[in-house]
Figure 1: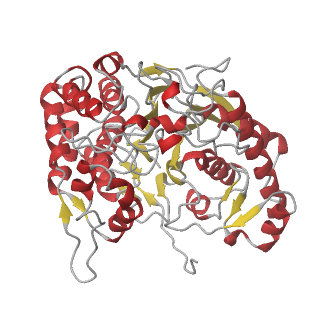
Figure 2: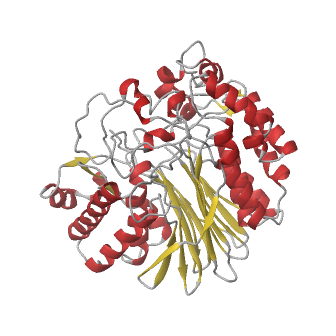
Length: 514
């Protein structure tokens, strides 16, 4: 039970802002802005730093998506650098515990031994290094070598063993203990370390990741896919039983393409097409616009509108979307950035689950994703396991334009709860007249699974109205368990750029360039 209320103020700066899930990473990005770098420089530096200071949610062993919006022209570009299945994948290697359809939207039947969730068999081809390097090359001003330096310094300094780190490690300690390199990096004798209640947090250096990042700084990003780093990755992966090979890495290329866009309340919402949360989000926007909520709509009626829109959109998403569907173009950290020119970047990167596959590769020293979990393990579905396929991802970075120029960069971590959270924030701003700070503190609802959840701060009348139509659980927005998504955003406000980070996430922060 949570009986306290936490608030975080909005942060303003005309020189630029970085909103992220860890203050150290946000400050690394803001420093780049202060030194004359642009929004993409800051976004890449922040994402690389997050791979060290928050290694269980995102990192160079994972993948993601981003949008870039030019502050002067308004032009929007998107990049897909998400994970992909190995070419040698055999779906028969993932037999079901039960062949029955569970009927739950994302609660697919379990795979024997949870091979698609934990361990080497859960790992997909990572795209983060290729994506971040490509983004920097196309829109940044920093050299790749320079962009890596803050992350290298943070890896050498080490992970702070504060109460939140120790809680996070304790949650996954039994799974981490099953892999020698993971246990060596994160645990003490197979147990989670304990935070001191009298001394400042100690630090746990990450020497393997520091060496890998230093090698990438010297040799370039493609070394991760075709050089010495790639050789070490493949050796580690195959020694653990993965079928991911050298050809999978060498073939990997991120994909630039145009955004998909839709109008909402006089603003233009830009998202990524394909196997992301973008198409579902725009579908939900259209449905909510049709319901026409306003400032005077009673809170219970407004909540019912949101719940119906979210549930319908999510049901259609899982029934129709996936790499085998037609038509379709082929846990998590989000970063939102605005620079002094008004250029914005929304970047979401993930390992998928908390600690991904729970595998730290012995030579590379990095956690690897469990992207196989994103595939439906049942055969014959739009998103079924398939060689070389890209799974259906929930990530949904967004950029919203007002009068043809970037107005907001928005995104979140939180799996299937991402797009419902983003919809509520956008609607709070444009339908309910909330400020960005108010929208981030508003009580949240999640309607992406069979049982609808509502924050008790929404009030008894809202909960009662929802309970008349849906199975309902009243659940506060706690540090753990994490019931709702963890958003961050930057926005052009009346007094200049303003940023918000998720109030309940203890490390999340907005850093100003000056």
